[in-house]
Length: 165
Length: 472
Image (cartoon, rainbow over all chains, first blue to last red):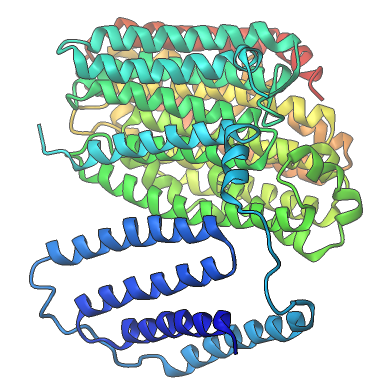
């Protein structure tokens, strides 16, 4: 067990442990904050796997964007902090079947590709510069269109949410 | 590398999107910028349409193979610009009397047209998807543009939720195709169809992509959203969605399910054939019992999607040419029909039922005459454009050996005679009292131009058919 393994298990523990808290917590604020640590754990795993771009986007988008939005949503909603959220189990049979199918296919993929994966990731160059260069050369058009789409979404959201004039 | 040549090659797209940005700024800087914004938007759509027609001869690709230019793309760009232009002329007073934010309306129309142009000129599935999203986002907002109207809000929300769901299918399909082919380039996908046609993931990708498209063109199992959205949205927006939106979806569908793909993958072609048949029959039968004109036109647009799918099934030059001609004719006649409905509609959204049109020929003879012309053309009666449109796609299907589909199409259009002509009979042969609508010069000009073009295309269909035949 070298340093890599220790760090891996730390991040995995953070991710899985917080995910468990998200599911079982009765307080929606605790659940939201636990989600933050789950995202952080995943980002750490990405770093370990040398997926630098994915790790940064995970932090920027999931933690910086989506989670903050969710926290604001929770805090701006009236009295949601002290409302008990339901954590009981409903529809046990369909849920069990679905979980079994998903779990089965995931472990199937896991075992069938097990032998082809080598122990540690090989040293690869960082991916961010390559992605950035692609975005500015061959994918410049989709990149620019995406910005117009965001503008349209902004206009639309402002249109719909505006007070009656 | 991209450079000035890329920009010059995509002039229609450039004109429309830049003027969208400029109109947005004008509208927010000047307090009375509406007039300037309107004319700028209208001029830019006209310019992009004319430039599209002008550039048809030179074909090529731009932006490192992301866009195709000239030919098919430019013809479609001209068509979408025409739809946007007609809609702008028809909506100025309609929207102005119902809401105060006309500036945003023009901006959204312009960006919707830009999205449509991207869809028709996409050489890569990523661009196609982005164009579709751009157009759809504009439509979601436009459908609920009259924010105080309950039906408008319902239409907008319903369209948004179901549209987002359909986008999921489309995107998942693209992901599968990327997995199977290793590229999102449309040309590469089409040329690898011959050796991938038995591969499961390739077929799953194609099917998911097809479902996404069928939702956007409103073919029968995926048409549930159409009546409510078309009825609740502002009438001019409905006209734009049913013409420009449908034309864009079909032009993109034809890019991916092009003749050389459809003729190779038998099962997909058979599925489209069955869906076309069901759509033609279902749309027409559902339209029979409608009492609201907008709902009737909504179901009739479902039926027209079926006729158009016949051209996709044909998978030959005649069918594809027919689709483009059909889209042009349909844009003119359906924009016109919805334009008349918009002019007659009351401010609260009333006066849209069949009974409200009885005896219309006495109080507003011009509008009644125009409506009758559009109805005849939608039915497919010669010498109007609608006849040659149907003739072209059906003859393509017969040439491809799908005679049964053409027969179903002809029978289905016989059903449509009832509800289209029922409106004409009501307008001319029954009595009724009507407030005379205020004259709106712009809208009348647009309607007359559309009617003239329907008649012209009906008399000289070869003007467009010869042009589009060079694309395939």
